Image (cartoon, rainbow, N blue to C red; front, side, top):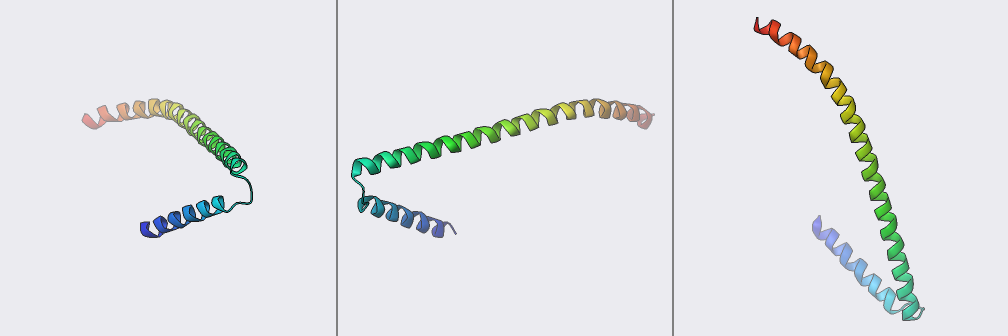
Length: 87
């Protein structure tokens, strides 16, 4: 499975390099376009990751606060059952 992925990546890179070498644009234009595309892709990816982390963080904090209130009532019922079980 990993061998197939490695082969796919290898041929992707070969195709990318061939495309860049035989591109109809001048090298300066191609490099500027490539840098602009890479920059926008990285910024978009970081924005998506940051948004996902923030949503998970807020979900975890809201879950923790609901667990905290639930565990208080749960520990009260457990402490009530423990002495009767011990007696």
